[in-house]
Image (cartoon, rainbow, N blue to C red; front, top):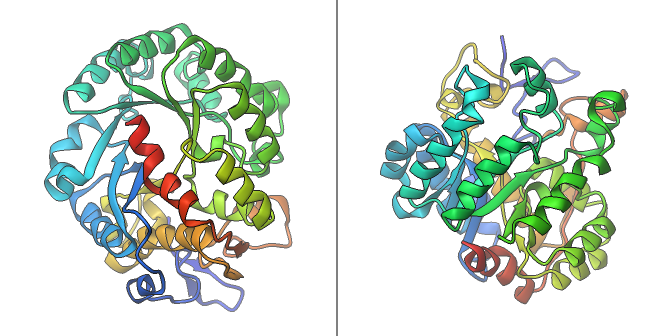
Amino acid sequence: MMTSLLRTATGNFLNPSNRFGIDYRAEAASFPPPPVPIIDIHSHIHGTGASTLLREAMDLYGIESIHSMTRLEEIPAIRAVLGERVQFIAVPDFTNPDRLAAHGTDFLARIREFHREGATICKFWAAPRGIDFGIEAGDPRLLALDAPHRRRAMDEAASHGMAFMAHVADPDTWFATKYADQSRYGTKRDHYEPLERLLDEYHVPWIIAHMGGSPENLDFLDTMLAAHPNLNIDSSATKWIVREISQHSAERVRTFMHRWRGRILFGSDIVTNEEHLQTGEKSTEMAAKASDRESAFDLYASRYWALRALWETDWSLESPISDPDLAMVNPARHAHDAPRLEGKCLPTETLCAFYRDAALSIV
């Protein structure tokens, strides 16, 4: 049975979103109001009860609005909770057992439906583990970013004036472990080659998720951003971003964020799920990240707490969020360990562009 709690070496249980028992409601007062209302460009909102808790976290941490990869069928329910504060991102139906149809002709129809619902962004998920997904479905290139059926989806989205969002690469820790078989997954750099061709072919705004998939390598991101004027990146995937951005010097991060202000968007990658509010066996690993209302609230609020601490403060502390990637590459670490969070204290001008202005310029 999956559980949202991790057992420590002493036998106690630990909430992986709240390793130190923080009161995230009270902690919100540790931050001044953000210099501008924040737009979260990257989330996955599901479930009315869960989205109600997310709304509370948004209120506490200064998040004015949010863009979500919600299933088309859930839009009315989520809109009933979040109203005009939520905008939707067009995505395929990953629950469709016919995966070939879901990412082919069915997606074309869904893009049109999402557009009618006001969506201004279309998402193209091309993570390396998508290779496994495609092989299971009978087409290894099912989720290849430049596959013919995905180009047709891009044509459809572009015809409606949509920006493109893409997930292209995963953490270096995963390429050292999960993706060690280069004959199957290639190198991390290989995954950027189709992206660079498509950036030149589709002259729409692109948003590459998770700091462009390379928060580990700001020099590489400098090169990509300089070469492609329509390339933008978001800061989503909280654990990954906290771990890797904290390892860069504050000066390097401030220089990077200043140079590319207007092209870096704030995002969290929060995933809400109605199963987060329930005890007992869970259907997926993602659903197992919380098991009652309080641990669900901690799951959502912790991401905003950590991201605002990273970008706005000069705090130096151990993250309150467990990061299992540490144990992936170092057997001496445990699944409930966490990296240092080293705040970068971005200037107000940079924060304004990052938190709001960049998103408004695209969507």
